[in-house]
Length: 244
Image (cartoon, rainbow, N blue to C red; front, side, top):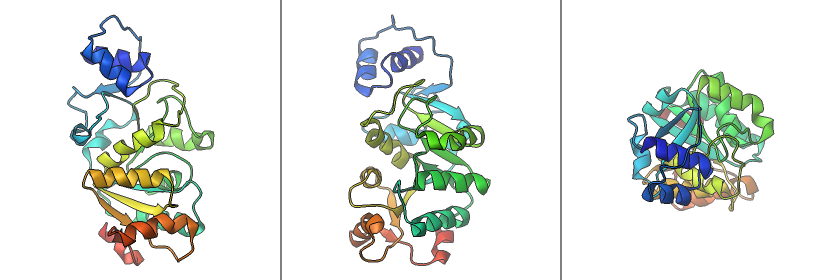
């Protein structure tokens, strides 16, 4: 069954519905020749927190240290085009939060990349959950970061090989970022962004959401302020970072 799952995931480029159908119909004639690293929902290494999802991935392709999945984690998420304030707050949170936490984010440009890089700089574990094939670097500007995280941290994807980064992949992968994290820290968010989708996934799973406050009129922080007004946690000074 595990081979069937992996072969179907490769054949159908990680399409959840198609993989589910292949498993249901027992498509044992599917042979992929996959030689990379992968775990299935049947493996003991598979994170139990992902099994709580409505759509738990059947297969996780990975690069790096799978043992990081056994450690407590927080997600740090935010805009792809943050203000300097959001960038600095992200760096300070990673530097000063509880050392036992692994930092989870999406390996996108902006806040994601900053969180991963600061985790590496701080000799802290980090997990990048990507929305394209495990062997595909996206965005290209993160090529060096991708290599560093795969060597010193962990990269996860539902998508095999060089599967392209399709638009619907990113909101779907956000559920994994939320599920892997003990709490979700938002350091920059516009009103309409993928960040807010990740927050919704975290709230659905009963995760704590904590935000950095922004001045009134700051577009890159409107989402943070909205979440705070709706009851999210708020970080009011740098001494709060050590309490995360």
